[in-house]
Image 1 (spheres, one colour):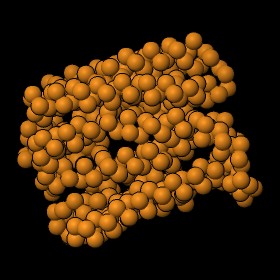
Image 2 (image 1 turned 45 degrees about the vertical axis):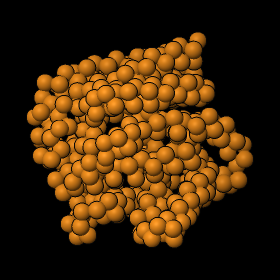
Image 3 (image 1 turned 30 degrees about the horizontal axis):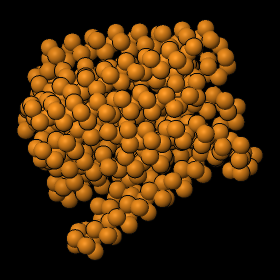
Length: 392
């Protein structure tokens, strides 16, 4: 709810063109962050049940890896900024903001993963709500003070991330002094990398599936249309993922714990419950979004984003299929046969490019929205096939 209210607040002060530029910048940042950091973050979720009695042991090893990977990514961003400054006389400030944002967001995600894995739902919910309030709130404040620009919005996002990370680090699922030797735990490091390495190519593949359409729209139709589409996508995806997000936070740790303890009955039961409740809730929300699409757009987006209303049902259906795909994909993570994820998301990425280009060229921004259920539907079919293979 905080995220939805925040979207309305943000679109009131940020015009579509600026919002589009911010979306494109964050998309590039996400690509780099996912490639270097996402695999280890995902491994943290899966390995936590195996190391729950000594969480600091896992934390120390993961943090050591992430410090190095975020340092490399931040250095690359700064070098790119210096090159652009020298060659094109552009300002270095945006690159500094993005480099800092990458580092802070990565460690914020790590804290969220530990809270979720430890099933500390109250803390997870409070921090998530705080993030949904601080992020748009400080971005709007930055726009009011510094003017409407992508740099101002990104600076607001950075300030929000820092303010949220500080208490999360202070009250973290912490390591005790006896866990310092975990920094040198070569065996655990090897296990983490063995699990994580097949996930690294997913950074690009997943980025293509979820974000490439924005760059296709930007190349064909311009940044303003990217802003309208990104705003509609943000609303549609968040409305649909509202209930599935809660279910995922609740049932995924249960499922992983059941698999780790070899409790096949509980594992099967929790996955069945997860899939059924996600499917029913998504169907209900999609019908509601279709009927009330204009009211939702009017309530949650500023007037100059009005064309987004007709995009919401397509995005809602597509994201519902994605939510179901994530449920069946959890079995791949649990079985540690992560190579199957390349197949699942590779098929979705290929479909997103093919259908995205065809539909956008033929129908413009509405075509981009109509393509979302197509490629996420293909991804869901492949994820069900992978689930059967990993369960056999």
